[in-house]
Length: 111
Image (cartoon, rainbow, N blue to C red; front, side, top):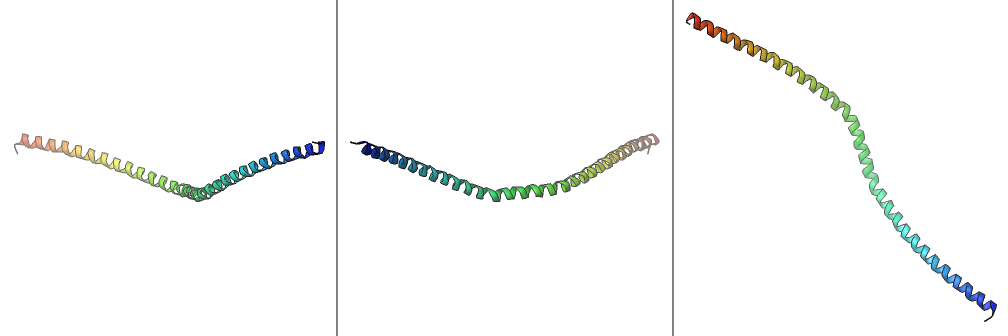
């Protein structure tokens, strides 16, 4: 075998190795393309969900001040009602003590 034939065989081996490597890389590219497609699909599925979550947050941000005002109003009304209850209790206590004195006067008077 002469030197030229050896070089040809060497180049043929090199070509086969490179062809295998190219096939391997093409396979890897295919796998990566599939992964990219899956990720794109996932992104497409997440976009509407993200949009809805952002709208929910915006709606909640709008509603919070209204709810805070309602809470303040309810707290004020509650405080007013508690004050009225205390007044009623005092009135009832005074009426009860007055009834006790009237009853004692009736007993003493013989009525």
